[in-house]
Image (tube, rainbow, N blue to C red; front, side):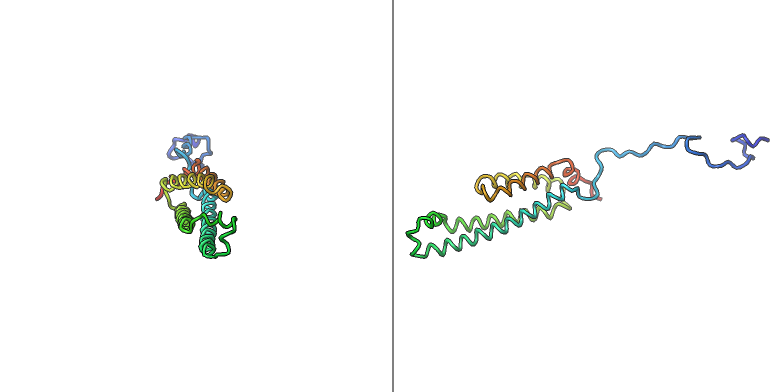
Length: 177
């Protein structure tokens, strides 16, 4: 009897084989497609923070429009300002138009807040809505509110880029179990 024969059932117990001997090891399991993010990527999280900054700017803008509406309404009743040309340019704005801007600023801020809240649980529809929202915000920041809207425009372009990128797509299209 030979103990050196590996097929001998009565032979000495064999020691565990070292890697590289015997059967080959299985190849590592590969994941197909893009890796699924478990935490929100940094640029998507930054886009959410920028959405909250836009909400804050909308609150400040609504307050300024409301103060302007109250001030113009009160000043139109003052007879001493009827001859002031600087005031007459300001008085050309109707108080109804200013209150309409207040309403629009509040509604736009609420919409931004709802979208910012949906970043964690939202799907691809939220991503597309955020991109449309940010593009419209960038356009509105350029046309009617050129000086004040410049910050809105920059933030909106960054939001659209961050959410529209590959990491944003991976985050909003991730599987939910």
